[in-house]
Length: 143
Image (spheres, rainbow, N blue to C red):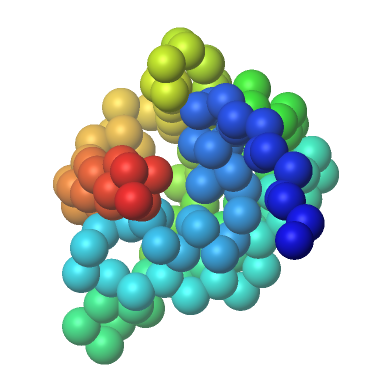
């Protein structure tokens, strides 16, 4: 009987990073619990792009953007556009930091053009979707 080679432990930040870049994982956690996610395309690499839909209560909400910089287990810089407000483009940065002992610090920043745009994002319910999405990510990574 052949023994499988021992698998190298994967740093926590690599797992968290993969959950943000692999569309098969992204659909399992991104967005509010009540919505199903459908990916049109998701090419998470420097110069790549994405488009996906959240479907909830018979309504479809489209989102798209471009990946400006992707550094494995370190950084993702992307644009984010909710197609319901096509002029409201956000520039987002995600920084992944391995804290050791299976923990990762993820710092996300979204920049928009104005306080009005920021308030519109929050009023749209996106804050709830982000919070629920990261709760779902915790559950996915724990399982």
